[in-house]
Image (cartoon, rainbow, N blue to C red; front, side):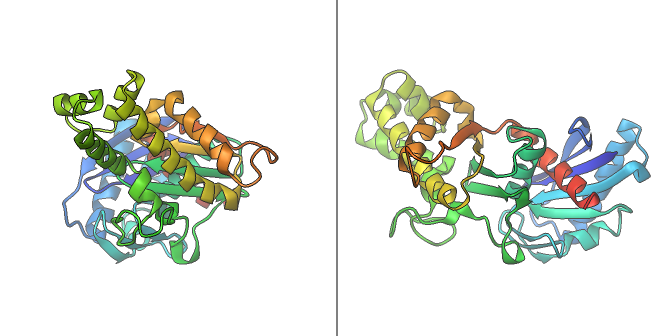
Length: 318
């Protein structure tokens, strides 16, 4: 069986056709207009999928189902993007619009939830039924699978772990609240913490790297690995923020594994092992209950696509 995966972003949409084993046959992306409408998105995406099918020598009727992952609040049962500030859509009936162009079933869910589904189907959590995925990027996205089922909440508004509060009256978050996990553990927050540290310690290696290379999430890690005290402090504090935010989620769901994705996860064991040690010191029943496994997500740039394929498979075989 052939399935289509669609990963919707703020500036482009990635699409693929893949087998039920998760083998991508063809993939590509196209740029979208800043103020794209739901109808335009559906038409452009459907036409692009047909183009990919032609390139792969696949007939349209061979596509068993389409899965879509989009940012924001998504009501998968109704097939509606309820709200997404990244793509500026509200109450958008994307499945209804897609079905005007596609003859196969179409399914949609939040992109972080979809990525978790992809890791459980094809990646680092393959074969596991209880999974938490946290992506550390511009924001903090969380996808939660419990007993093999995605946790989406009423109307698709749940599983927003990035907006659990880890510090009362803390840093302002883009959501409007203060002290959110996202305000401390996103890559954006890490870069802000790096800038502040460099200003306080202008003679540090961290400050020197920042001046030479410009701000990025790599700076504090490179400085820390070189033995710079300021860099090590920034990384240590950031690890603590990540672990504290994860502990709140883990204490509720106690998954088989916690997966960390996003650009920061590229630091590998240097970062993942530190988070694991801290997390396993502060979770409920530490030292008595089984340790929480923490791993880097495996699917990386294809997580959204293969997650969407897994969503399509799940929907078609329900």
